[in-house]
Amino acid sequence: MTDPSPNSLQINEIPETFDTMIGWGCFGKGESLIQNQFTLTQFGDDSVDLDIICCGICGTDIHCIDSGWRPSDYPFVGGHEIIGRVTRIGKNVTHLKVGDRAGVGCQSASCKKCSNCQDNKENLCEDNVVWTFNDCWTNGDSTYGGFANKWRGEKEFAVKIPEQLSSVDASSILCAGITTYVPLKRYNVGPNSKVAVLGLGGLGHFGVQWAKAMGATVVAYGTSGEKLEDAKSLGCNDYITAYNSENAETHLNTFTHILATKILNEHWDMYFQMLKKNGIFILCDIPENNLAGINAFNMAAKQITIASSFIGSPKEIDEALAFATQNGIRTWANEFPMAKVNEAIEFVRQGKPKYRVVLMN
Ligand SMILES: [Zn+2]
Ligand SMILES: [Zn+2]
Image 1: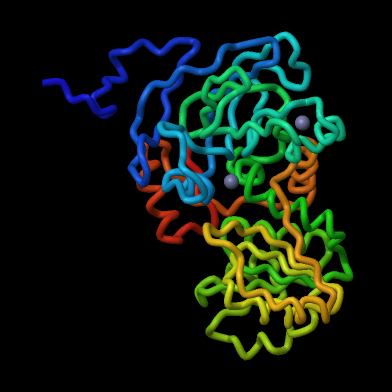
Image 2 (image 1 turned 90 degrees about the horizontal axis):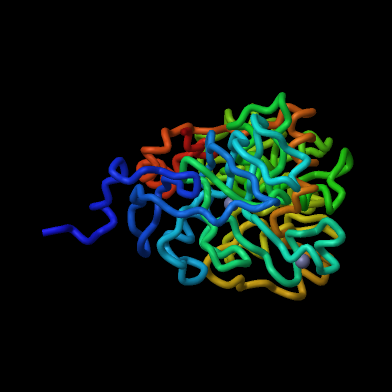
């Protein structure tokens, strides 16, 4: 009897065509990924085809596998820190040529017409943010991410990768990097700033590097004492954990900014104690539960701003890649072969990466 599950597909028996790719699909909530063939959207004048070199794993991939934020549209192919080699371009593509390396982050299209799109803020498109996976192109075809051998999408969101930046270093800048770079820059972090980075993981290790390169004093807050040496290597001026929590007191009322890549609702009072008056709390964590436990008086008494930030536009990604190239900022990555994607996801679930997992084709 024929097994009806996707496992039964014999990939090698199906000729791969110009319009198909082999990807690692998630077919149901919490399930392991299964290799399968998928049909790409039609190639057009604005299209770019990539042979994928590598792709980082982001917390979003796990949230989508688990339908953590909202029900996912299974099957989907995750991965939105994609670096690939350009193999074909449509006739309207001028910023890339065949053979270049290009990168694609979380977003793959926008309406191009609203005021934010017109203002190079496509990440804030008012009408139509198209996600790189678990979403549909405007014509209704599924978008597919980077846990695959090929990517096809629109030129606007395929950014050119600087020659001097390795593919692995560039990959996680497309999500973890841009998510932390943009708000630090928007809220004017510089030599007079003192920044607390909460959580030394995929986002946090970028947060520390950006803030240091912008000239700030940086203190990281983590849970694991074993990351102390890494925190120093990343450039932290201090690293606070439960193991040396007495040091935390010396930093109270001194931070101009907190970059929170990991928050706990029970700690809001402490976060407000850490900040100076007029301090800015930048929320980069998107927990699955609602925020709670904020004491409005404590917040008002210090005139604290709670700010959020939403990835970055292609222009900001270009800028972050250039800034990373100039300042030697890189992805600290654990590399896994693409075929070991399920092992790699388990590694991420267990919180083991130092500090990002990148899948290699
Ligand atoms: Zn991401
Ligand atoms: Zn728009």
